[in-house]
Image (cartoon, rainbow, N blue to C red):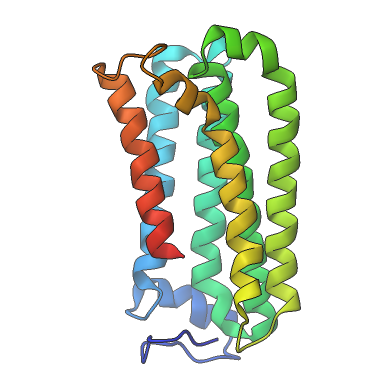
Amino acid sequence: LTEPFILRGYRSTHQPWSYYWKSLFHKHNETINVWSHLVGILCMIHLLYYYNQRLKFFENAHSWPFVVSLCTAIIMFMCSAFAHLLHSKSEKIHKTCFAIDYVGVSLHGFGSGFLHIYYSAPQWYYDKIEYQYIFILLLLGILACFLNCFAQYHFHPPYPPLKRICQFLPCGILWIYSVIPLVISLFPLNFPLNSSSSLCHLGQIILFIVGATFFA
């Protein structure tokens, strides 16, 4: 349950569950991981409430892809927060917690792509590939979830490079596929890059690549 280059701050294993729940308010090597995801949950819930007041989600079908994306983000943050909070109890719990974490990541990958096809894709692309895109997106989400869970349970320390390949490759493919509508819309002939929204989309792609590189 230790990580290379993290020398201290680990919580004891095989303690009562209350020990790990109470560690939410203590300093340890997972404190920032736990609280950053909990703050993410609060931010997403705030956005859900804020935009519901303006868009009336239950009455406005055009807002539903946005709701799907926000809900999958909340689920992802919840899975990650609880994984980082509780995984130290034992090796079995560690593997199970992070398998659940990967389920949340894969689900949000689907939710992001679902949002992109309905809000960011050029009309010609949307008309041509809407249902095929969603079906392939779903398959890639399931594949990413399966391979991450497989890698989590199959490999044991010291982990071989194949474990990271099984984890990052399917997630990378899922992400690349999910942003295809964004990339097409950002192409200068279809979406001038001098608009504020296109710059935000471009920034999203660049920041994700930078973050994924550091995480990998």
